[in-house]
Figure (cartoon, rainbow, N blue to C red):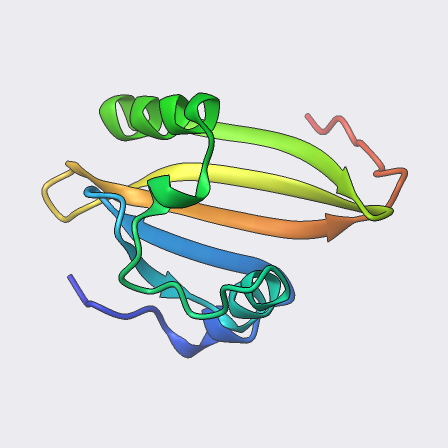
Length: 116
């Protein structure tokens, strides 16, 4: 397994943050760094993910790491709506190796299509 993500992830128009199975942040793309810089953080690589979450969120993180699941929801902050998608990632042997969070701005009304 490679220890870095390809260049395409760095310049994406959404925040990508990756943590390992010990909750240590191992990757932040440019948008993620800008998001956390606005909160006084910026480069949090090497920091523990749990230090930035409340008890309820820590429980969700533990469940995702234990079960290998996914958590998705929307938020609105300062008039900006975002879709938050958190999912476990797996190593080459199929074991849960950590979490990925993708945060993207979305419009107020998001089209929904049913495809068959």
